[in-house]
Length: 87
Image 1: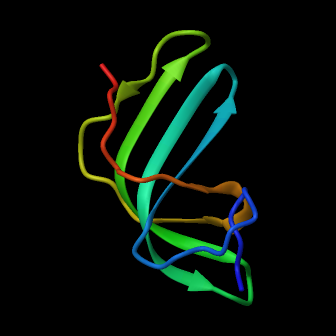
Image 2: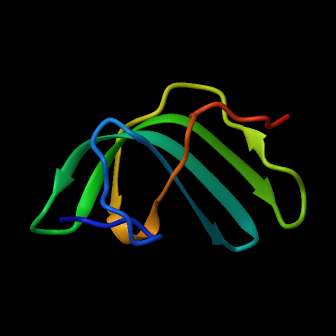
């Protein structure tokens, strides 16, 4: 059983999100779980929404198509909808 950052079992085809900050830039990724690897404890997300912001500024939606991404399961948390209210 692979668990998310909140300690809940990851559900295939459910929506999850994560963020990371580097050099003052925060990136937010929202996607649907399309694969769970029980050996590496990673999940593959089909990225649906992506946004970024600088320092304390609001997150702005990134326009374009996105590649799938793999990330450790304990870095993501479940969300109800992939919709966002970014500017």
